[in-house]
Length: 465
Image 1: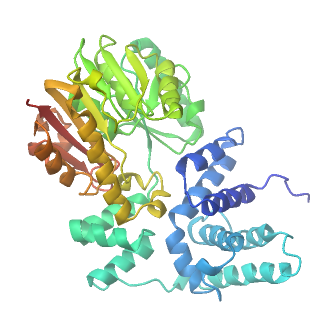
Image 2 (image 1 turned 180 degrees about the vertical axis):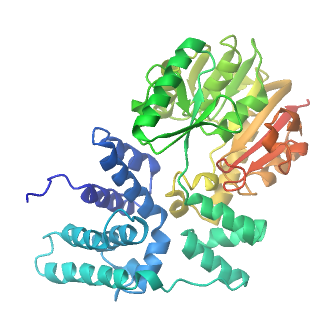
Image 3 (image 1 turned 90 degrees about the horizontal axis):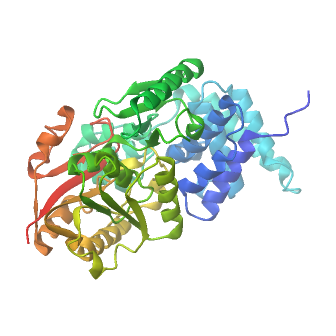
């Protein structure tokens, strides 16, 4: 039987090799590469998506167990062989729909004919390691939990495939049970959340929702209203988001509910001016414009032309009015913006520890030193922009991380170094979040695995002088 010329595993292998070679693990590169195959049948596209993200997500765990059976440690293997073994091991351990024999044979085929002198041994090596893994599949030598802090951090690092330093950090802050819940949530399949366009005519939205429900039933897509906000919908089991009913028409945009809370808690009113200094891809700015019923002014700023183009694309698709895109560096103070905004959004660049479940490459890019660098960058942004808001105006500071250096420690620094005070917003929160720690003081730390959202931090300030 003639083999199909298109090899999904080869595409995934090329992605992993590129990511490793440039030492970037960039979510955008992975997403854009996979998006090139949107025309494939849904099952084929879903296989590639899961194999790519699953292998990256489980890489620490895969390397640990492969090191038990390989004569050469993974870190010393040739990149191509290392990633072929990872792909094979992921299919064997985590993809029940792929028979073990198929996972082994397809991995061997990926070795190819490039290494003329060593080809036989490389093919034989991959075959031997993976068959040994299959042979011991039901009794693998995983580490055990002991109750000792450092060993528990190692245990969690392997079993949840997170960096050891991050496990230690979370254990010291949250304790074992909460840390385990957070780390396990990173490995769970997360829904894609849509925010409904609040300015669309009800009949248009009704038609879109009916079409979405029909498609969900036909393609077995999970569709339900989010528990926190009435205009948020959760989708599961779908990859080709841009092909869904209502996308081109601007009836909805992708935005996690935690991010929606920024504009919701700011509660902009018609006629006000809102400024978002780190706006890409534009979700918060467009949400604010919708809450003002297209009767207000929103300045959506970001540093690069590419990011500004993404904001403009979303503005046009969502038919948002009153939103002006400005290319500007948030770290550079612009005197013309002083005392101009009623509400200021500072969604600061951060470590992203709250969204590892969506972007598993983050775990390989981040470390404690980079977190401190980001803390300084966040403070530089605050210094440059905090007085863009009028006296009496609102500042919403937010990050998609759960690092105290970037969140609570920064809040203390902001209070010491500018004329602002924290303003409680407990009463404006959805009922399920009103008793979350910090809300009475004007802060909210959402935790993945605990609150049903991404990891997200939000603080509300009022300028006093």
